[in-house]
Structure formats: C-alpha cells, structure tokens
Amino acid sequence: MFRVTIRGKFKGLDDAGRAAVLAASGAGYTEAGTFTHDASVSVFTFRCQVPAEGPDDGEDDGALGAMAALEAYGLPHEILKIAVTDMRDIRIRRKSG
Image: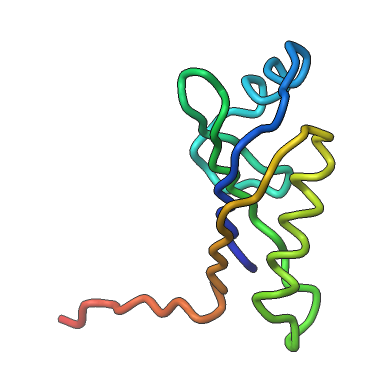
C-alpha cells in the first residue's frame, strides 16, 4: 500500500471544477483521492492511497497510480511535488511489559 501526496496548483478551474474539488475535500487518504486547498481553490494537496499490486511494486508505481486518480477528476492542474510513502516499510514498535 502506498500513500501518495501530490501538491499542485489548478490552471483555469471553472465553477464545475471548483464544485468537484469541494465535493472531494478531506484530509484522509482514499483510493479515489481527497483534496485540501486554499480559500481560493487555486493550490491543492491531493492525498491518495494506492494498493501495491505485487511485491515488486515500487514508489514509482504508487506515484503513477495517484497521478491516474488525480487525472480521473479531469481538472486542469500543474503538479509541483509528489511524495510517496510505502506503507510496507512502516514498522510499529510495540511496548513490552
């Protein structure tokens, strides 16, 4: 499982696009993706959770999956930065006692 955060800015967002962003607003990671944005809905952070298809999938696969989810919204945008976290690498320390 990959958690991907894409930071970007919208280019020429119309009223229908603005409504789509507002409808998909949220701070969590989902497979469809959620947006957080500034008050003018001109810059955004898109959070997306992408399942790993196989054990050899890497961060590039996660980034491509998230970009596809962002493209599915059909909104004109420019990507400024992408950060990918491979959740398979996250280890939780349990307290012993």
